[in-house]
Amino acid sequence: MSNDNANDGVAAVVNDSVISDYDLRQRVAMFLATSGVHPNADNMKAIRRQVLTQLETERLQVLEAQKKKISVSTAEVDKAINSILQDNHLTLEQIKNLLDSAHVEMATFRSQLAAQIAWTKTVQDQYGDRVTISPEDVDAEMKRIAAGANKPHFRAAEIFQAVDSPEQDAQVLKNMQGLLEQIHGGAPFDAVARQFSQNPTAAAGGDLGIVQDGQLVPELNAALEKMHPGEVAGPIKASGGYYLLMLRMRYEPEGTKVPDAAQQANANPNELPLARVLLPIGPKPPKSLLDNATQVALVLRQHIPGCEGLQELVGRVKGAMYFSLGKMQLSSLSPDIRAALAKTTPGQTTQPFQSPAGIELIVRCDKPAPVMQVFHMPSRDDVEQQLYQEQMTVYARRYLRDLRRVANIETAEDRALKHAESASAAIR
Image: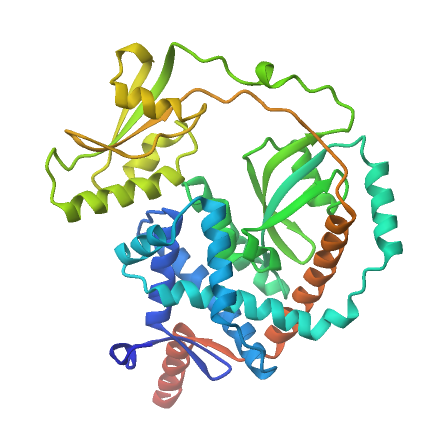
């Protein structure tokens, strides 16, 4: 932290380790920048509280790593960043520009990733020698998977927050309801999972891999059975806390007849239902304004799931304008727009482009045809890795719960309340 922030206020103290207001502001700004959420005064308070809770958890994890003399190298953080860039089809320069536009230091992004890596290494150091996956374990799991090949399978992702004691239940539920509102408001599920989920899957955007019908606890399995790809369910109370679940893909039982690609794909239409998003900066804007508007459009594009809810989403972006174009004959569009649309599929959005009016996005409002996929048996290596991850997740939860039970965590609000009570007692 720079000297300019040395006298910054204290947001919380975790076992004598200070989380400054600056730390908190940076993380809130980073979440807003990477998620595309545009909060009002009410949900900004909730976001701040959620981020502070996560910072407190991370500080406990980092302190435990330091206690065990576990370090994280620059190369390990670089590898994690590269993985995020690949998953989101971004460049490092785009990430830097995004953070710069929100006045977030790159060090804030790196420190969050370092904390996740440190915790993973700490859990492995503490419990790794207790987790042994034998060939017999893999055989048994392969047999179970083969026996369930006639069942649906689900590629799912999770956000989990623990309830360590009954008095925490209401607050954790409220936190998870707030996260669900942010996702419905356009925040990407994986970005929210990386920021707020308390399971080790957070580092992978909450990804659970492929699970078989009946494999998860009943509460979560029942939700998956009713979901369609792209849907998010929750908060669901199960197995030590609350979950949000996202279904990425459903796989039909092995042997299901799948239509060929030509049958599954939409025919190339002569007309399309379209919507237009405009950032009106005029025909000859200054380079700084052009670059900023293009960056805003790139971020906005990542959060557009199609035309449903698009007007509301655009309305939360200062200066952005929404237009419903209805069904448009492709032949009536400019060659540039036709070329941009040719690179999209149903429900997708074009890359930002400059027009005399400003920076524009064109959104396809047609629905993609359901694409049926059939489950195929995983490899032994995949099964072994999943068994290992499942056991480490159980240990990680237990470890963090034990750390919380003996932790001394005091927020600025707690300190203010104590001072007020002390003053009141002195007057009496």
